[in-house]
Length: 294
Image 1: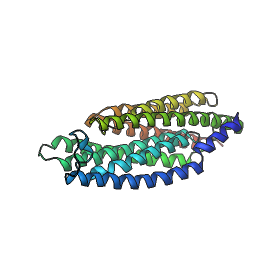
Image 2 (image 1 turned 90 degrees about the vertical axis):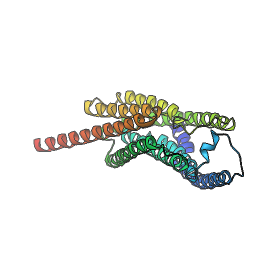
Image 3 (image 1 turned 120 degrees about the horizontal axis):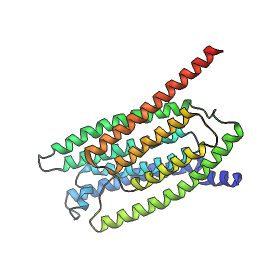
Image 4 (image 1 turned 90 degrees about the horizontal axis):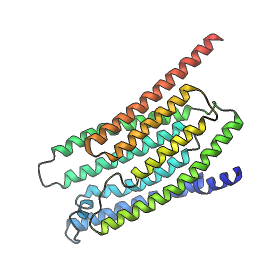
């Protein structure tokens, strides 16, 4: 069973497929950007006609940035799945990285809407833009802190045989999540494409990410429950529970439009930083006290 899991993981989520997918995504992002920019130019010079709803994708040259960011986000979700067998901290940190990019994409889209606006009534958009920019800074800081903590963290809480079993279970979960990722991505892309062809397409961030983050939260909870087999340390379990709480807030924020969503992004980032800081501080204190006792 373990050999089969390792083989499947290497085929779909190993370093080689990751490098190949990254190459494809970079090329796809460049091509997507140029194609979207060309369509924007054609629309601006009235070479193509679009419905009022669909024109929202092409009424500013800044709209062309939406496509490459969407492709990079798809790749980052794949990378998130690859981090699941690593540490819980790395996995949560990757989720914050994805949300940071998602907020950047929203900011760029809002800027394109302001750029294309023919009225002076843009005060509401500027207010939301300001709050979203603050959310970006908080999320970016959170992602960096998690990345730093993950690079320093070991899996010393487990004995070697228990660690191997735990990693194997997480690899099984990662393979399952990869299959779900493909299904949700295909469904979301096909549904969105049909809506665009019918003149009803939107750039709402809930597309794909709302469904996938809901599934991801369930996966995080499952990992937390599985970890109960191997650790009984309260501080470690409480820390991971706090991390999950921050991702639940992220999921709610994705579904919340405007200022309320941005504020919840800030709240999720602040909670993640606080839990990470407290757990790091307590671990250092416990280590120091133990050293003093010796």
